Image 1 (cartoon, one colour):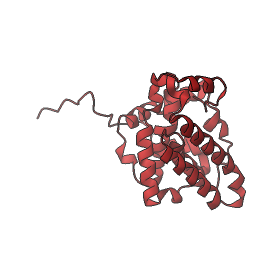
Image 2 (cartoon, rainbow, N blue to C red; image 1 turned 120 degrees about the vertical axis):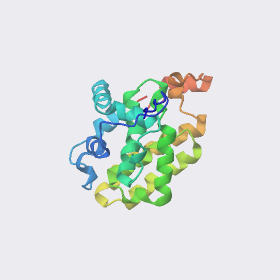
Image 3 (spheres, one colour; image 1 turned 90 degrees about the vertical axis):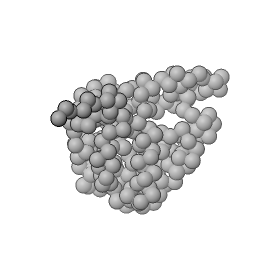
Image 4 (tube, rainbow, N blue to C red; image 1 turned 180 degrees about the vertical axis):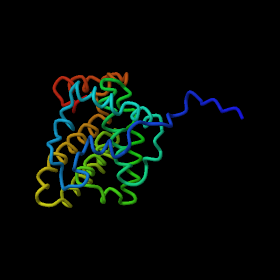
Amino acid sequence: MTEPIPSPHTPPSRHHAAPAEVLDFWLGDGVHKEWPTEDLNKRWFGGGAQLDADITQRFGSDVEAAVAGGLQDWEQPALNRLALVILLDQFTRNVFRGQGKAFAGDARAQQLVLQALADGADLALPWAGRVFMYMPLMHAESMALQDECVARFTRLQADAPDSLKQRFQSNIDFAHQHRDIIARFGRFPYRNAALGRIDTAEEKDFLLKGPRFGQ
């Protein structure tokens, strides 16, 4: 029997990493502990060319597959879904930095997050995992999702043990900053160049002195 010829548009069906490898790289022992033993803030929020290269080498094919709609077997259970969200919402920004494709995983990531919120699966995640489950809401060019983001990070702080409450204040502050930008412009002006969008006069002024959040 002749094997069917795969369509060039078929998402990749094979990947090199497993969800646990993504979680281990991004969260360390924070998957199992109250908070990661290692200080991962630079990895999470500092970025840099070397980190971009490392993520591209280790997970680039997985990111491509996720953006193309593959890795559907990662959508359940909750920890696998978190790993998929990290691929779509975090690693895309490393692998495709400065390109429009950096945001190509956002819509799917947001859909996965909303599914997790609907079934309460986010509440079963480790504390650091909840941070990155909510990040796609912060990246959304949608006022409704920005409002949801502020609400989720506020609840995260309320739910957290006293030892972590102050840590989550910065997430709440950043959530408000992102929401304020969407309330003002309806989009993130610092994405305009990568996405081929024309800056308004007000956006040009903002880009001269406003935050870019790594993009």
